[in-house]
Image (tube, rainbow, N blue to C red; front, side, top):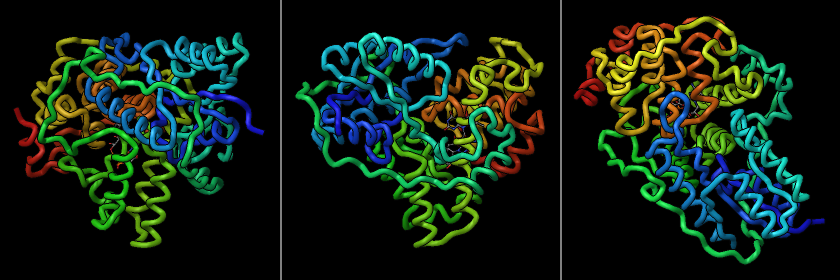
Length: 430
Ligand SMILES: Cc1cc2nc3c(=O)[nH]c(=O)nc-3n(C[C@H](O)[C@H](O)[C@H](O)COP(=O)(O)OP(=O)(O)OC[C@H]3O[C@@H](n4cnc5c(N)ncnc54)[C@H](O)[C@@H]3O)c2cc1C
């Protein structure tokens, strides 16, 4: 039997389709109140001196919220957007509505987990509870053949066992109606109202990214559609210029505007109706990397953010401001590194190849504290995702999940191989 009112606290799951949090709340409760909290922490700086969320990602988040709001309105509910500490905002909602339960997404980052624990304690005092549900991975944690503590420390071991012993759950249907108490319609603030400087769009950007589930599904249909881009993904994925060399799903995945399972189903459909080849598999392979960093972070928790990483290794701890600023501003004098850093600053995006190169340069050539580089990426990236960002940085700094240790990239060789004609460096030259 369904019980009273529940709150669905949206975080990095800004979608209606394949949203296990929303589906569970609807299944168990008569009325649902959808809430999103704009946490002031988003605008604060980290210990490394960069903002947690830069202007471009904030804009993308607000667009994603606007899209979620209109999708919810279409099925009968008004999204409530709160500005403030999530614990205070949510407790206020519980007290005002008598909700017995808050549903939300299970988190992997330790700060996010701490926040949920703080909320749980406060809810206890109001006779309410928090239910956190996994909804952001390809492989569901309960289906994996190992528990969190036994997640293999080598990606290939994780992938092989997961692929062999786990089947991927089907996506959940988008709800067609929500029953909700009568609530006012709220206004989503603008980036300027939140204190961000408006930033111009750079015409050289790989894509005009806009947040929201509708845009994510359009991009999915485009990439897995008639132009057959997916058929050559493995060959093009190391590209640097334009929208088509890779899927560009990452900003939408990071805000949860689309689930990895929806992408998986689109790829399977493509394999059945168009063709199945190494490239179609390779997109799934990359999504497994995404899963892997999430599970590795769940296992190693804070160790992921330490200088010595999960291996506890000794690595450079220097923080030379002059060198770091040259890297940030694309003034190192190494043209391939500089071009990539300028692209990031001007657009919030950088290719996977570029990210590997500039991160290797930061750690191995400039020999700086890798966490400063990771924190700068955290501020700038449109697709920032705590596990993928810190996991990849630690990997490249030689303190993460890489059995081979140090990952040194010969920048000249990389430039010759991936930008032989110098087009990319010309595009992002001064
Ligand atoms: C130093 C560094 C920092 C990074 N920070 C982030 C980050 O904050 N957020 C983020 O989503 N990705 C991050 N990545 C991974 C990767 O660079 C991006 O996911 C990718 O470039 C996004 O473009 P795409 O969607 O076109 O990728 P595609 O090549 O089309 O791949 C499809 C999807 O697979 C996943 N994926 C691909 N490569 C990786 C990878 N190496 N690790 C984890 N997932 C992967 C992403 O979800 C991506 O959207 C980082 C990589 C490096 C080297």
